[in-house]
Amino acid sequence: MADSPTAGAQRRAWLSAALLSVALLVVPLFVWLLLPRPGPVMPVRHEPVQALSPPPQPERTAPREVEAPREVEAPPPREVTAASVGPVRGVVLDADGRPVGSAVVTCRDRAGMSVTADAEGRFELPPDADGCEAVATHPPFGDSEPTRVAAKGDNVVRLAAAGAIAGEVVDESGRPVQAYLLAIESFLPVGTAVHAGVSGRARKVSDPAGAFQWDELAPGRYVLTASAAGRPPARSRPVDVESGSTARRVRIVLPRGATLRGRVIDAVSRAPVAEAQVELDSVTSTGANAISLVLTDGNGDYELEGVPVSGPFSIRVRHEQYLNKIVPGLDARGSGAARADVELRPLGDGGQREELSGIGAMLSVSSGGVTIADVVEGGPAARAGLMPGDVIVRIDGEPAAELQLADCIQHLRGAPGTRVAVTVERTGRTFDVTMQRDVVVR
Image 1 (cartoon, rainbow, N blue to C red):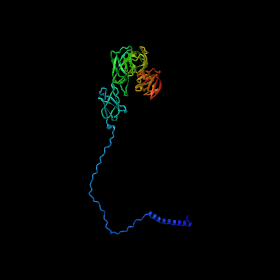
Image 2: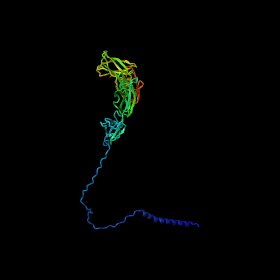
Image 3: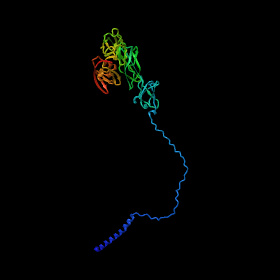
Image 4: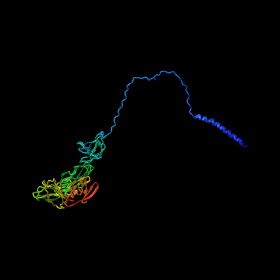
């Protein structure tokens, strides 16, 4: 049955009153829980006043002197330096284990570090040489293999064994030349060391069979020259000498030379010059040859036997009252005789001592080849811009590497007014120069 409107209204009124009553009870409780509670009120106690006394003090004992423990100082850190390592000591031995005195020991990987061994082969390098690659050199031995040396221990550096060349000297018919002068025209060593004094060494040989053997040669490539009375110098083929071995069957053919005749006169007075010395000049790179100089007679005449049959070659004429004169470009042209008359200029006050005809350059041999060592101021080479250190590559189209130093000198010399073409290398750049030969006084 549905409620009447009056009953529904009564129930809603009763529910609202009930909800209001609950809210009036719950809200105060909730507020009481959230608000802070005051602390309890303590009653005040009145106690008797007592005299104030200091707080009890701890029992004191007499002070004791306690020695502080000493700090042990640690040693300063030691830096290991070359000085603390010490010098590098050792000995140089030959291939048979014998000491080699005066050998030069060089650290090839340390610039400027070199020392000479004493008479017993002992050497001492500075501490900075510790760990370097040492190489020993001493002609006639070969260079040692690079040896790693250290400051600790006794280092041993062994030189390579020397070699030898054996051969014979014969004339144009193949017959033995029994007495001759044998010389080392050029030497290219194995390795990087410089063997000073090897080129130019000469010895006299006397043998019925014309045979020779040259021992104690440092390993490398050699060219030998032989000369005899009436026979101008002739060269061997290049000979390779190896450590501990002998290069054999080397033959030098020594043909008979031509005779050069002429007269020496004063360039001013035209009078003959007596007792002037006439000799071959730069016929070998070392100057070693068996063709003796000759003197002019009272008429200024001379006769020089043993000049090359084919040129070019030069002669040098000397007299104490005149400038030395080099006469270049001479050639017997395959015949047995040639002629060269010479005019000498009297000495002046300028300090000049020599007159020659060429390009005005001095040559030397270096590892790079034939090199210009110096140029004469105002000469053709200087005017062409050539400088010391320039390497000559070609002379009139001929490779300079295939020529000995003496050949290069003869090809550059010549009569005044003639021309010569030279190819030069400088700091990796190659260029050609054509020069007109001239008289050079120095």
